[in-house]
Image (tube, rainbow, N blue to C red; front, top):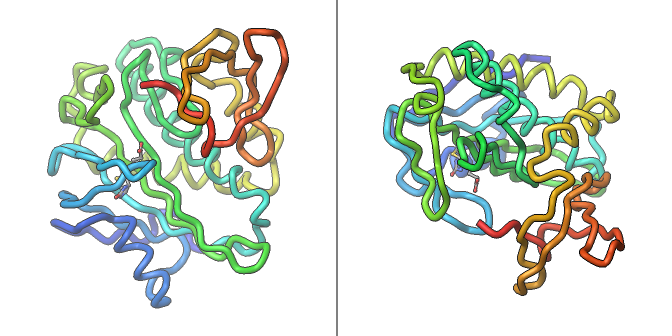
Length: 252
Ligand code: BTN
């Protein structure tokens, strides 16, 4: 099986690398591990139908095509965890190399990557299911590299801001591909390792945080994530519940 990043397609400009990747997958043009990288996205998409802004040529906008051989649809959140862990790992390593505190890099459920309270990367995963299996997955990653951080509506940062060093896109891309490959190899094989690592880096774990639940303000304490990706929280009255992303969101 090819490794992630063996094939990298570089585009000067595209609407969204996720759209481009999904179209290529549907037409059978892209093999497993193909990476689509765009210097500019004109309609970059984030979660919850938000727009995703990147500074052309300065930030990483890429999508990775995964064609799992046997990944049950029920286990698809393992993929989201693996992607978050890969981005987390790269950001933490680059911060540590610059003498910064890598412990400040956290995964905000479901898969935002934060340094302290500022977002440095976001992930948008779009899976195609066939029956009860994941036929293909497009893992879209937006990572603020050399810009000032472009996420709208929330504090944003970039690798350059955090480390004080210009990075360049290619070294970060290469590191991301190899780290993603390492975590991808564990999906459906080492679920425990993935879950433990993900829970270990969870933002706001063990402290009360502000959410919206069904559109209403809610305070709860994140504890862990269950197998289908719901956030397990302790309520203010001490009860423990699990909520999916369609109901519960962190307040920005
Ligand atoms: C989020 O945090 O809301 C997810 C952001 C995901 C952005 C990336 S950039 C590359 C890929 N193409 C897109 O249109 N979106 C993802």
